[in-house]
Length: 322
Image (cartoon, rainbow, N blue to C red; front, top):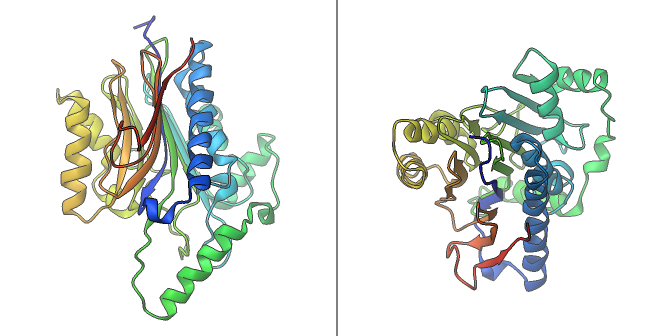
């Protein structure tokens, strides 16, 4: 399928995103970073780079920003530390790489990619993943360098509500991810996260699990998920969508069925971004909002936060110069 028109979709998380809780300044900052991310990935595609390289380029922008729960903006676990996860998958040969519970890696998606390309394994975790990173020449970061006051205060609020046995109503699944179709017709998907704030016991969600939070196959589609990880794992959400597409269901219908039917019935909140081998795009979510952006095969860009996808007040729509 060489000569395909490239396209890319990104997400920066889903959850209780409301205008009432969002200042105009903060919203503009988030939209600008989403635009920077999707354009970084699209530039890679237009330069003829692979879909996996485009996915990494887009995710790196969000990992480097304190606005998102990945890399530099990662949340704290219950012990006041960071445990980051990431995965990537290529649709051409179903090659994949993932890391879980790393604390000294600036861009976990880069390490996941290196696991995919330079090891015989799919997933490495914790100390072993970081030893592999050292052997691969990665710069090891001081864990303290991931500290942000915003995330620290978030942990304190959750701890206080937990002690008061109050409801945790501000569910926020701020994983980041990207899916892309390149000029060679190859699909790729990637996801990166700091996990769930106040998590315990080395908890790992769906983001680094191939088939749950990330999946790509040239015979169907590429998916990156963000949401209640345990439910996404149980229902193999990303693979579930791709399998339906492979069996003939249109991408939009397949993604909507999994997100707004299967996951809803299981009390699984969140959403996905997906792209098929023809460049069709789907971004369903069952939460109040989902940070998302895309550039389609025609070069049209869309940046959305709230539910009214594509409407003037909920999206920034434009064209990208080729």
